[in-house]
Length: 495
Image (cartoon, rainbow, N blue to C red; front, side, top):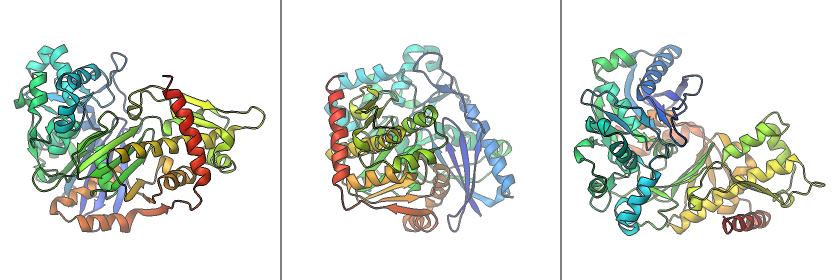
């Protein structure tokens, strides 16, 4: 018997099957095979059709069942991971009234910033743990202001994962964790954020019913079976945004545990049991999947670095090299510190951890007689690693004391230079696991029984690849980081 995991990304939908008894992964498929597109009617806008997500989910399910010879009755539960902060609005028949405004759409920035200013930093920090910023609540306010006819016909709004669960079950609900990622939860009052809804003039009746993150959220109905190929009566056991779900995939639930991601952008997602917020301008704070308004506090502090793997990919595309392996080999032949070459990797838009400044990529201290592309490759890996270290310093100032850091075995964390540099400078082991968001969501479906211990063991037994250890001799790394930070601060002081 198996659990099905779905990962609803903005580029593709992934489906995974894991064994119910052991948590062992059977396989993962992706739909469509080419990346999904986005609608961008204006600069800074990004929309997708929610029904397209559902079509790709159904296709992925049919593929994975066929490839692994699984019948619909062998799937005993569903877990869903999804792109965070998106907005789906539906009418009384559950039909989307417009395309989804997804996570990377920036049209609501000014709305959120004005709310932050009018409501006050202290109130937002103590009650919402965040600025309203460009999150789901602010996007809904944009619809209210700019598309009043659409707004008048809204029955409920949903996050992307809520919509997929609805398509399976014809049941509309959401989770406390999901509401918090939309800045729609008041942690001080342990209730929906009426303070922000009232400020925006949004009717509380538009908020879906709240269901537990783990447990029977809804069940597949006849229509869901006909379209998806999953048997009616199959329970949806779990739902979470992609970053909390990544933490779940890595068995990160408790204070001091940190999940790291090193893809196009980079993320530290650190767990705390403290509602205190000092860095709300640079760090986002969301209810983690095991946060409970009565039993225990579990907050995920999310620090995002936009300029991460995209920088290394840019070098791959623009240097005369054939592969990342070739780049890593050239980088390994250069000393720590890249013989003085520094690369500031923030060329992927505004950086929240740098107070939303947009620095661009900077390459400094290049000697045209002595330096070559190997130095650029090493400087890029080090520069990205240093940005992670810089981010961890921000998290420490916000009260995080990392005890365990875990990352997936992909992208930047496959680089020994990158991972060793981070581990050495933050003086913390980095454990690497071979897992994905879809696999994590499938396994998390099994947490409806509340057995976190067995869940963690299944990850440790099935997925651990290796552990990067901090080096004893930290001095060359510390010197290189000091030089990089000096160059960064020079730029920050002049932007």
